[in-house]
Length: 127
Image 1 (tube, rainbow, N blue to C red):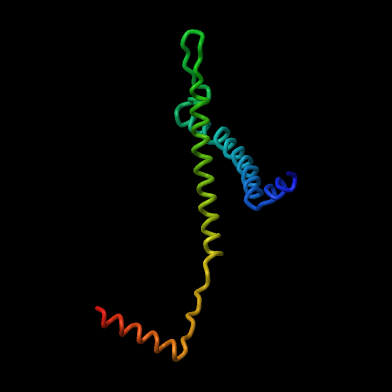
Image 2: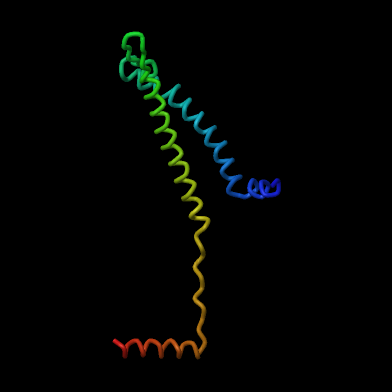
């Protein structure tokens, strides 16, 4: 069982996924800080000092903190868009690396050239 687990854990896809999760978590923290510390205060200034994170709706003793929810939704969209842009840029570079060089057309010898000509003539006669 240990050997099976080792074979599974050491596959390239599992290691790539683990690295992506760690980097994604760190990236998410950076973007969350960007939203909470820079973007939302700027939006608050534009809206006349309104802070979305502190927005609540109180009914009796219950308090609905919808501002924190809206903050999380905004964080999600900014993180998703940022990751989309990073992946798109990465894929452009990857496509350039993976572009195969043009394969040289193999040269035909005399027999093959004759066979091609015969094939083309037969196709013309069938039409």
